[in-house]
Length: 336
Image 1 (cartoon, helix red, strand yellow):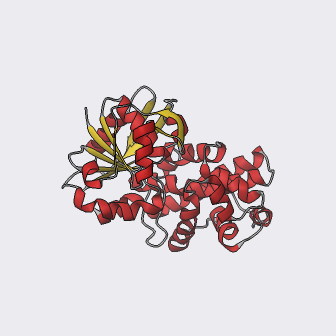
Image 2 (image 1 turned 120 degrees about the vertical axis):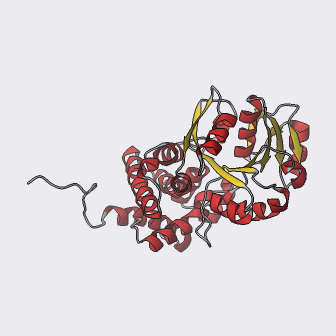
Image 3 (image 1 turned 60 degrees about the vertical axis):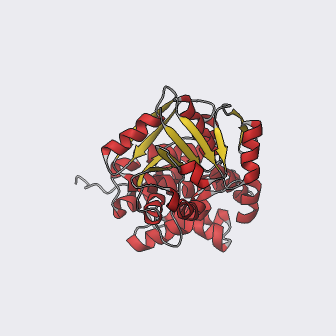
C-alpha cells in the first residue's frame, strides 16, 4: 500500500484518485480552492467537474500543500498545464530529495517552449519526475471503464513503479523511456482536436475528421522526431491513440470548444461555455513556435493559430489547407 497525494482537484486528478484508492493506496487530494475542498469533504463528489463519481469516505482532502506532500510515496501533479509552473514553485520547499512527482496534465509552456516534466524538474530539482498519459477521459476513468495509459520516465525502475501504483483490471498501464515524445504527443493532439471540433462545427463529415486525425499525427510526429522523440511513440497510445479519443469524443473539452468556434463563436466565448481549461488553446502558440524553431511544416497547427488569434474564418482555413501545393503523402522511392 502506498501513500499518495493528488495535487489538483479537477476532473482528471479526481478520477485518478479513484484508481489509486481502488488499488489500496491511501489518497489525499489537495486544491488551493477552499470551496472545492469543502465540497469534496462534505459531498464526496466533485459535482461540477466529475458528477456521479462518488469518492470514498476515507479519502483525505486539504488546502495545506505541506500536509499534502509530506511523507508521500508519490505526488500526482494534476493541475491544468497553465498552472504547472506556479504550482511546482509552491511545492518546491515541501518536496524532499528524490520524492517522485508524476505529471498527468498535457501541454507545452508558451514562453519557454518547455514540456511539463521539464518545468517540474526546473522548479523542483531535488525531485524525480515521471509522466502518465494516453487516451483517458476522466469521465470514463472515474467510472472504471477499461482504459490504457503509458507511464514514462528516464529510468525503467521509476516507470515500472508508476505502472504498479496505477495498474489494475480496468486501468492498464504500459511503460516507455520516451518522455519527450509522450509529452509532445499528449500536448499537441489538443491543438489538432480543436481543428477536428471546428470541422464538426462547420458541418463537415467523417472524411474530414479522418483527414485531420491522420495528417495531424503526421505533423505531430514530424515535429516530435525533429525534437528528439521516437517515431514509434507517435504511433502508440500517447500519439495516435490520444489523438483519436480527443478528436472523436464529446468528453473532449478541446473538441467541444472547436465545435463552438466552428459554429461562429470567438475563442473566448467558446472557452467560457466549456467552463474548463481548454489546453489546446494554450498549446497552440507553443506548437507553432516549436515548428518555426525546428523548421518543421505544421499546416494544420498554423491554421488553428490563425483562427484562434487572428480571427481567420474557419471555412477559409479549411480551404487553404485543401488547396496547398500537391505533394506525396509519404516519401518513398518510386520503382520506375
